[in-house]
Image (cartoon, rainbow, N blue to C red; front, side):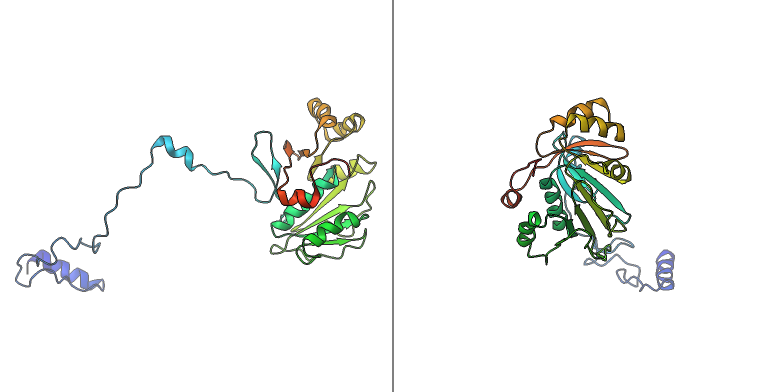
Amino acid sequence: MTATTAQTAQGAGAYGAPPRTDAPAGGGQTAPWARGSLRSGFGLFGPRHGRHTLSADDLDYLALPIGDDGVVIGVDAQGQPAVLGLNRPTPYDVVLIGGLWTAQVLALRAAATGARVAVETGRPQAWTQMMHAMGGGQNGLSVYDVGRVPPQGASAGTPVLVVRDCGMRPPRGRVVSGPWQSVLTLLPYLSPVAPRLVRQARLVGVQRISPDESAELGRTMGLPRADIDALPTLVDGVTLWCSDRDRQYVTTQPTDAEVGLLGTPRRMD
């Protein structure tokens, strides 16, 4: 055994690995069956495949849209999906000045994402068909009279959306927003309580309103003149969503199932 071979064998044994057996004891050549089958320290060669390569021009095809998860509420002006994250670990209040149709679409889609939806309403007949279509309250949507919503027990595993459809002057709700429980308040028009609700909300959606209402809301929310002029002209299904840092026009496009259940987009109920 040569000095180099002896040191290798001794070092391998010191680290718990068995001594090499591919070299004859007399220091001869490596055994023919082992020649080319071992790499020192790396074991057997694996199968050979061609390299997976991508040209620089093709890198754009790997781009993926990354954004907030939540409910797809429509498409923006560029035709891209607009997503509203309703399931949050912090309280989240939304005010929608618009039609019942849009509020019901949001409730349907929130339930489809796994949230439980509790509807507080003074017109339960407007929600009955939708509740029955979803399994009679057993599959994520329940309807309650005004002031009768019980504690929902929201958690990260069972988030809740409370929809308050209580008319022009909704009373203060017994069930408020909290961790994993968002509240959507629907106002058919700009009522006297709207400024207070708008100031408290994290997100405000506005559909077609009158020029006078638009001017008043513009002062309350600090809207630019272009949006104030646009609000009275919005078509059915279009909503201006406003947060502290962003404003976006979104067109809600119903699925075939939503059209069958709720009809086509409309501002008036």
